[in-house]
Amino acid sequence: MPEDAQDAQDMQDAWQAPVLGDYALEIRSKNAGPFWVTMETFMKDAAGYAIAADEDFLNEKVVADLYQVDIQGIRIFRIPALNAVKISFPRPVSQASLLDRDIHAGQHHVPLAALPVPGRLLTGLGRV
Image (spheres, one colour):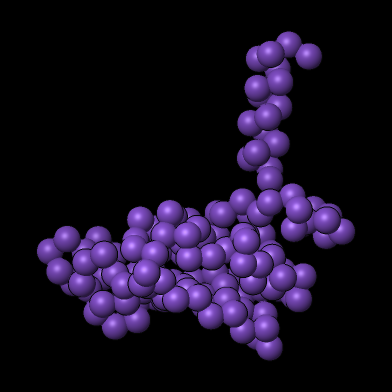
């Protein structure tokens, strides 16, 4: 296969790679007071929860990198009875301050939903 064709195939494969949002009923973010943001993943089933709850896949370092926040302030709560994972961290700027670009924190979930799921977690699940 010519190099350009392989590059195009690699890009198409990456585009079609499953992301966390593919396994969720809902991933949302919300304001948790003037100083905190909370995100919640509600997974479709136990298999989706196993992906979201995997501590090697979704952990404080991953969240810190995604949102450019201090790792020390991140709190992750795994709730198997609800197939849910809750993530909270301090807002970079306080709510409604001059530099606040999302007063309700309603768009913070997008990078989390777009997080690519590693192949090791997809064994036996197949494509979404």
